[in-house]
Image 1 (cartoon, rainbow, N blue to C red):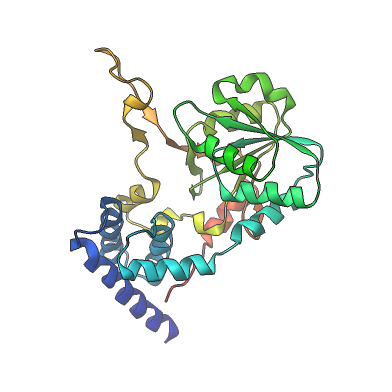
Image 2 (image 1 turned 30 degrees about the vertical axis):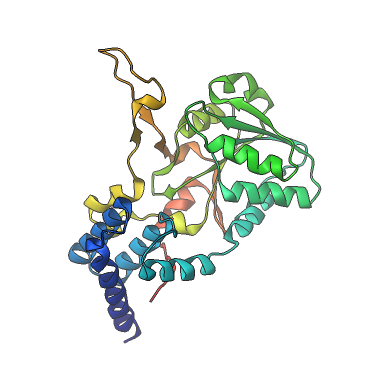
Length: 288
């Protein structure tokens, strides 16, 4: 009876969201996600698929200037997951001795920033190297955030990573989506993780269980709405490139899980093999 009631509530909420598709005030990205939600309800109408989809839908939406239905859901969602990054930081600290170590950071992620704060609070001594890319701003943003909190760090161009590999004790990477065999994150992580594995440097991916995506719950046509478009305009690398030159600019990428030492969530530190079992049992926030 509870399950049936929850499913009815889920459908009611989902239908309210879908009705916003014709609202000309919503962004194209929101419209795309709502169209995907309609596909889920049509092709895989069950409480798990609807709940799981809305979880990932809310993860990708900016709360600014949204219709009241989405704003209310975002408020509940953010309140439920408030400070989850601190829990992930604690689990990370329990799984590696960071004292007197050199940490390589990739991207810009709140879980990584919370870990660095925790290490500072515990008065640990450590060195930080932040990777940046000339084409993207993620690394620079994280470097600015950490520096503003009094953290001393070194910033290097990702093309020059090889010179510093012998100094690095651990690599920390954030992510957007975690799946059975791959995870989605800012471009460049694949090369970093592969280099680290070659040098036997542990690589931790920091996230929380909201980021888990079990693709079996969804029609294949909607999975791309979570992962997003990988290519940006090539002008970001080479503006007005000459004829016969194709410029490809990927800003996100899928990275094989087998390059990762551990995936750190708010309650667990999992090897890639253990992660598969976790994803098969995935449960997301229940909004209904």
